[in-house]
Image (cartoon, rainbow, N blue to C red; front, side, top):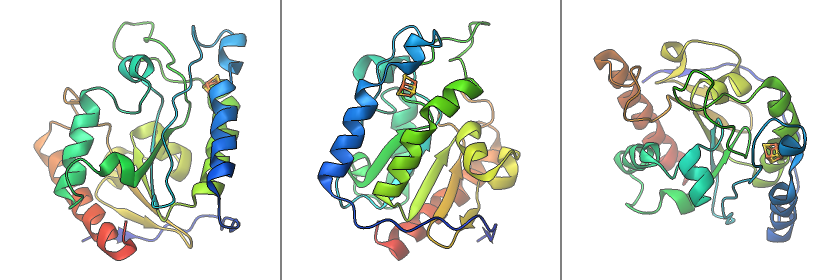
Length: 217
Ligand code: SF4
């Protein structure tokens, strides 16, 4: 089993968070319309995930897709079902992965479809910068022991630019938390459907199972 040890800057430990602190942060996020005011998105409608003190696992994606925007919960589309299967293969009790995980994303509002019509538009650097304080505040309050990074943008945000092949199937240790990179779980992903890449995903699922046991996730 491969475990890499990439050293990252030490984060400050925060005092134990309370439900009211998370509620206050989420209220600020839900009220945000900055990207709509700036003309970046058509409709700013931030997505919120319910927090519980039991969540020591955080999952960070890129941005809400159209179904997540419409239904107002993260990974509401087919990718969510793939993620659910991966979590169950890692030993999570069926039907519990959403309540055991704090689901969030780099930006919180659907960016719209890409200009070439394939898939969703990637949030721009300005949108990422505008939304980043919310993610930083969530990291401080939730204090996850494991962060599952879903997709290249989330991986790049935390670990720097690197090919998916070099990080999927690895666990990256940090003094206060671990990072587990995963590809985007879209069932139509060409990357995901290559046999050698499925092997990497299987290895990542085994590492998730290991973390679940060791960290009591
Ligand atoms: S993406 Fe983030 S910064 Fe932009 S409007 Fe939504 S919540 Fe606000």
